[in-house]
Amino acid sequence: MAQATTTITQRKCKCNTMSANLPLIAAFINFIVFCFADTLSPEMQIYWENHLVQPYFDNSSKREVTAIAGQTCQLHCRVKSLGDRAVSWIRKRDLHILTVGILTYTNDQRFQSLHTDGSDEWTLRITSPQARDSGVYECQVSTEPKISQSFRLNVVVSKANILGNSELFVKSGSDINLTCEALQSPQPPSFIYWYKGGRVINYSQRGGISVLTEQQTRTSRLVISRASPSDSGNYTCAPSNSDSTSVVVHVIKGEHPAAMQHGINGANGVHTSTYQIAVAIISACFQHLLLSRLPLMATGFSLASSSSSSSSPSLPAAVRPVR
Image (cartoon, rainbow, N blue to C red; front, side, top):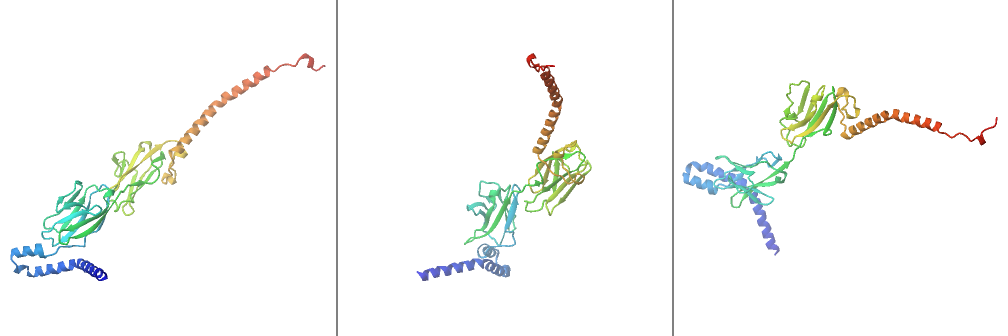
């Protein structure tokens, strides 16, 4: 029994060693064919290429790919000396065959195989990938035994973020200062656009608008100087490779400290919540109501005092002091 186990183990080791050396063996055979190709007839050349030359993978392909949800991604598999063998793409988690050659073998039409005649590259294209598509995919060649190469796909959901609250109150005449980040994207965005409503304001002719975008830090800063009530509205940050995000800006007149974006020259703002503004308004209304009622309360108090004085009972004659 022990001898049989040892024999099986030795065979497994030999198989693993053989698999590891397949690219070297294939390269050696290809070298022999190349050297004697001119002496072979066309029929023999086709036979050598299709039956004796072993395919092998070009390991220069990127094996781990990070994609953004909703944006088309591709996995590139390069196979040398393929001959008449077929290349298939298989989803590892459920062993589902996605494509064979350039044909799609799944009902999910988001998966497609791309190949150009004469090329050694077989590409799996995934349109509108979702987070659930993350996992391992295999590029498999129909040799005997089959050979395969694994690729890992990571699909991330990238959403931009504007620092501060979703609602901003700014005093008329001060600056609107917004900072947007796109930190979740796997690569720096090629551009970040700012919109007011549906209009791009990066290149607005209003004047006094400054946009500073730093691709490496994946941030963009929008400054609108000397804001007026007409600058109120919905401001959207839209990076090229992330979902957009928005903030509502209110530019108001008058002194409402609880509702202002304060700072040096109005540049560095402090965001306040709608709750604080409501409390300030209710407090002001209550004070106004209280002050408007004070004259009436004073008049009522005077009338009550005079009435009580006039109606006070006189002392009976029996108890009046004798002079």
